[in-house]
Image 1: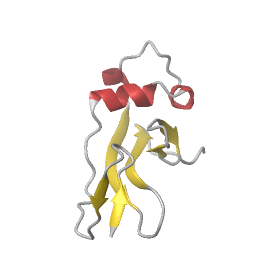
Image 2: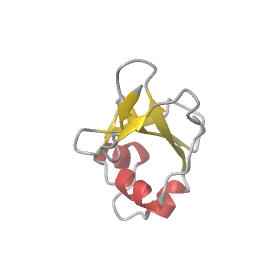
Image 3: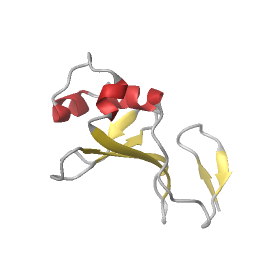
Image 4: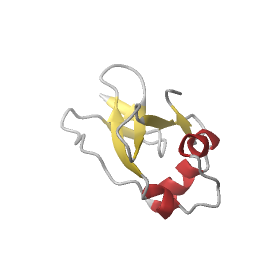
Length: 105
């Protein structure tokens, strides 16, 4: 079985042995996440906050997501505030390789 990687557009062989462990979000990815207006609104921050400051007030992880059925394969980001309340925000890459919120809560 093969899939197209949403991150780089390359065809890759899928494997059920793909590691599903969370991966750290890079500084560039935090910067991209922080530029999304709904993220700024949800955390009550402005674009003046640094990505490092933003990352210090939330939890975040990136997954190399592979759908168990036909569907999305690629980056899946989960971010969650520093208080136990609500649900995490999930982000995926769209067809233009830009991050977008998967479910708007």
